[in-house]
Image (cartoon, rainbow, N blue to C red; front, side):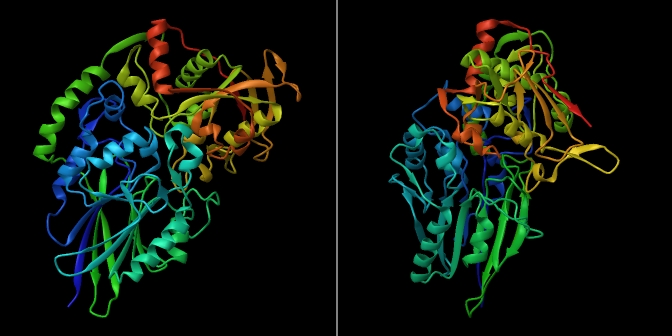
Length: 505
């Protein structure tokens, strides 16, 4: 007789516990409080999470800023949902070791992360026996790029090692313990196209494909890339991935035959419109206080900043990006500034609220200033110009490299402070034909200061040369907070309307 295991898996919740669209404040079919209504409660089900849980929404921005409380709200909601095991995501490190420990100490679930050392509440592996006698071995890993992206002070006392090597060692331990089913919670995605096998990246940020190809976990539950992937089998490993913000979760049915053969099927389940009553009651007063905070008007712009399509903004410039660069330039005193926008952009009405700011500048980044020359600037601009492609008729589109494995509009950078001309009729890598600073072509030997977010300063997103530039200044305050302070300081703001990039096609 077969023995069965049901897995309910979430990942990249990013602080979306309530069924709310924070950009508008309206109800939405999203959030853990909705997903959890479909979680079974029996002895043969495991409720699992793949990390990036405590950071990423205007709600958690408020929780970890203006409204820090003794009780860890994310842990309380996760407990109401009945989680058994979780792993850590890269954004769970954004508030530092003490906050990770506060979260994990109040969490009923056990945290498994085999490539993280220095946090006592984190274990490498676990073996549990279900009601039907099935022995399930579990481990977890997080992308090693935590070391690249995270501020050193947030990693003090923590060591993050290679995910693949840690997963391999953990699997050997689980096999030695004679687990019937082996499960890896991986806060990392796939470096290859899961449909064609084409390699998309060799950076080591995502190692899901390699784990499936070279190891033999029965189940690999992935996150980080926010791709909705269900019912995949790669190299005999059953695998999947959820989108972010608890819009869907994975339900996987695992079956083990009498001779030990493991099979699994998984499907994505929408969060739906039914909210868990206990979670809703707990969150309601917190969300009301958060809404009052978010809807506070802090200043006025001279025009609305309305987003358009990603391609249109890249081609024609974005007043939203110009505004962010205004803030960065004043804060840093740098000569130049670059910023990026999320895949989804809210924008600003003329009356600016905190909700507008945290829903439009969605990244947890801080600000850094580096020293660059023309060669570095040209390399960066060429990387951004790879965003564009031309079809045979000369129509401009978005390159596949910015669309696969997931849309990456956030890897296109908007520059302020220098007038740039790019010719898309030329080959990628040789499209930038002019960089003018203060009305003159920038000389090769001239050095300038450039402010940029902490993520990009690491070289992430295809900009490795930035990581080799001298660091001039490091501002530890989150950029969203800097925008807030800028608006409150100025009150009435005239937004820069310069078109810094001219595109020829």
